[in-house]
Image (cartoon, rainbow, N blue to C red; front, side, top):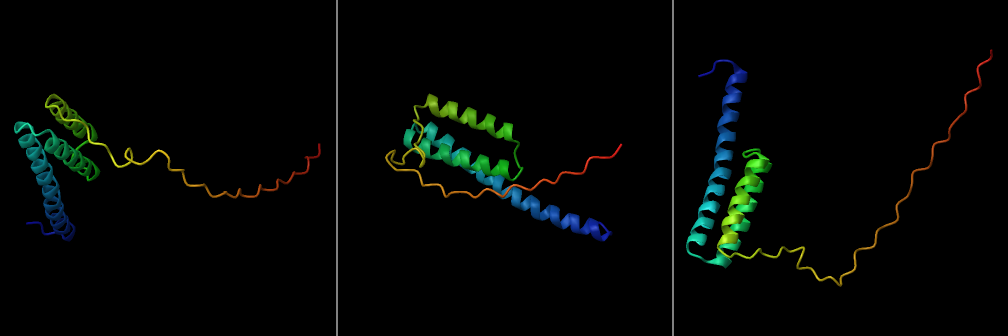
Length: 126
């Protein structure tokens, strides 16, 4: 057990962070296992939904610095390859499903800041 106050505080912080990280890791493992079960059952629709959940869990783990970005990208690539081999079609995202006839919102006119007046310095006498 640490005796110094700052070391005690660090110990408490470590315990809290470890618990928080374990929840995120557990969620990622659960989502990955659910995806594997859907692939094994050859349920393409279910596998597509689970793949989306796994991707979300990977993004959260990267955001919280539990996984490195390239590690998550590698895992996602491998899972996507499994899904493709199983015949899973990519799910359409909400942005792609928006109608194309909708007009973009008009931009509000922006005001430019007034230019600074420059003052000329008097020429140095020689």
